[in-house]
Image 1 (tube, rainbow, N blue to C red):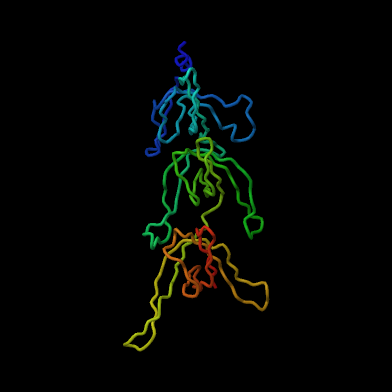
Image 2 (image 1 turned 60 degrees about the vertical axis):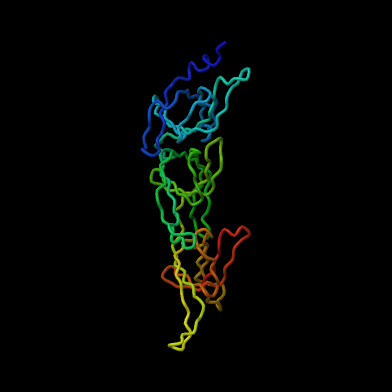
Length: 301
């Protein structure tokens, strides 16, 4: 019995591979057949988008893990694969796929990936500069919405997203789909693809300038003590800007700034560091971190 030949009889539709560099689909990448995962599909988003891809064992998929069916023009990303075996020999390969065809409702299609990264050396990274990383196909599923902290009737939409595992995504990456921008919050594996948790919100990071006072030295010419100053450009998040107090006798206003350790070349020290933000220069009074030491929290007056 030529079980391999029989099983591959219907797996003979030529698929088109997506080339992320040129942004086009290249014909004849591989041969396979698309089927639904279940005839009794759920009314939820994820089961409606999942498909089964049948192909010959050892089929080589495109590097983008993204292809298009030439007949339906539907686009899919490829996840995990497994093979059916008889007498120790593989005769059929099944791969899970996810439908990412461009939809009129704006929940799927070709998106742009943006990332802000430092351009300076590790000792002085400088402000983060945004650049486009690549184009990739994305599918979104609404999860919930949450009230924005310390706001009134302002909600942030939370979504699940699915992209090809050929891409590397990070926290604070931004995806732009149909004119809407989404911030990547979490990245996790899902059936051989990348699962994302994204929030529909703008980039809240801001550029700051830190002024650090150096050691005081005595000038033999002027007979005065002088202190050298250095200036650092850093990017962080203003998590709290408190310009009023709860007590009438207190007039002190402060602002809390969070800076990732990887985005600054030194540890800010209180009382000798000033931060320039919003047209004001403030003194850093407290610097704290956490067990993982991934961020600095600066309380500035």
